[in-house]
Length: 118
Image 1 (spheres, rainbow, N blue to C red):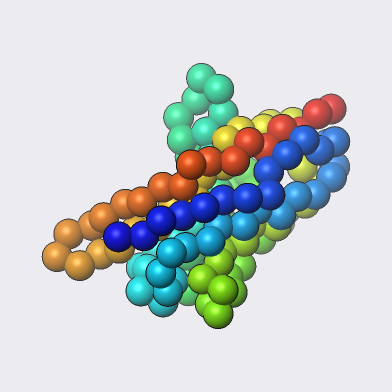
Image 2: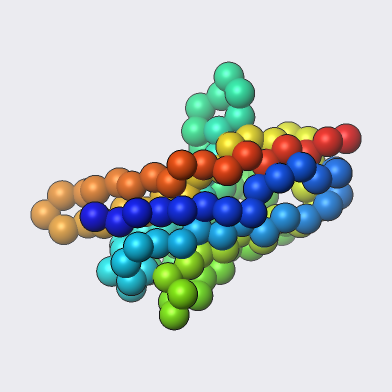
């Protein structure tokens, strides 16, 4: 099991930046996939950026070149640096972790609101 706690959301003007943090309750070395999803009102939850198989990064096309996912293994924390924010980035951002043993186990944080005003 893993408990995830996000922080860093808020209100920002278009073109601004925010950094989200996700702290895990166990070593992130033991987590197969970890990263960020988001859900805007009336829309499905979508992938934003993740590490898969430990270190391979994946980004949604809509955030490539603007968002950067990173990790601090010593702090068991994954970050999402968001630059050049747009109003369409407004959503609740969720940290996600998947642990794969004999089965896949998915864990989610409580979510943090990001609001980008124009």
